[in-house]
Length: 468
View 1: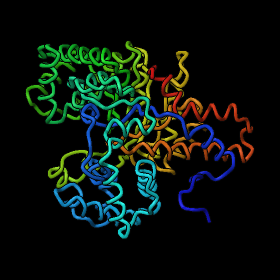
View 2: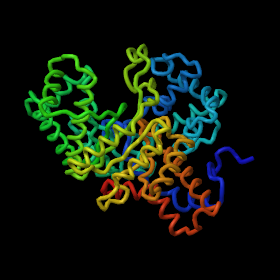
View 3: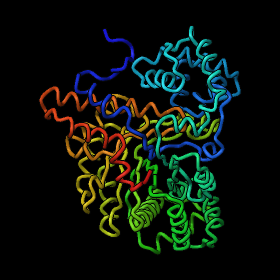
View 4: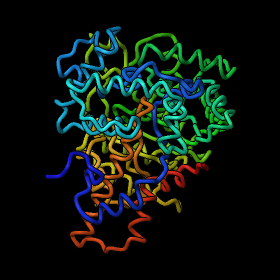
């Protein structure tokens, strides 16, 4: 029996062990998709205790707590913070087979140097040790990032954001991590939402462009894309919960846009036509600037109306959608490529049934002399666990080039989520090591080591053109 989470955790053979410890382990991190708060980084936030640091904003853990019967007051409510922590410690042993079990122990070990097994019985010991350490400067937002060996990261930002906090971060000469914005224009695409009209007004205000037509809207959007570009942004992100493709004439799009501004109800066809055209127009803006476009596909959000009304979005009440995406996505990518030259694109899926769909579709749009122009993004959200990550990489290897893969992102709001990169790297090395051990690839460490290091760090830097 192997020791619990020893130095060779998740590494099942000699080649995997060698690849991880000699090539992957010490590679820096480029976290090109996360949801960390730029303000908290700029403010170099300090945390009250381990409950705020460990459980604040982490809806992965919130879902596990709910499943274990914990009342909402002691999850997202104003309940006692020590009691919240104790209930999390009580829940962890029930997480057998869940990545939360491994992540939680990795977070304790890597940030707090605490090897104690998490349980209700050890909660007080961990609470006292961790909170004593949190008092030190090592646990400020910036030092948590630095001590995780992060060299660059990309936050997720609304086009109407001033990016003032990114400028404040750049002005700190002692903090040498490159923190860049990501343009996330979902509120300008989701024309069916109540937030759309107020958002358009905010866009008008910040761009100093009076928006009365769809043409005005595009001019205002492009002004923000250019502003983000000047602030160092080289990547966009879109939450495409349902992939649609419906074309329309210019006059029709303008009519739909004006109808929405008046607060009139739109048909499903009108919504889909607007979304299709706006995403195509944005892709043109990205392509002309050499940006990368990310499409996160397949979330079914806010399925529990009662809890959405109480807590709002991003609180752990989302699921995997099971729509058919192949045909509309193929048409969308083709239209962008035909009209404007498809930008570098990373496709993420939330349903594992779509793995091979995305990999084979991507291959039809590779080219332009760009290695891995089309990317199959790492296992995302419900798929960033051992099984999901392994299947994602096997699908990519089966029908694409795993060696060109841009690797792992945390997709997290937590400053101590970086051990997820270690988790991914161990799984990567074990997969490649297994192929070598089984005679499916030669034992050539010069080649193997480079493949591993590129996937861990180098490919993402080259792909996005980021200097560190």
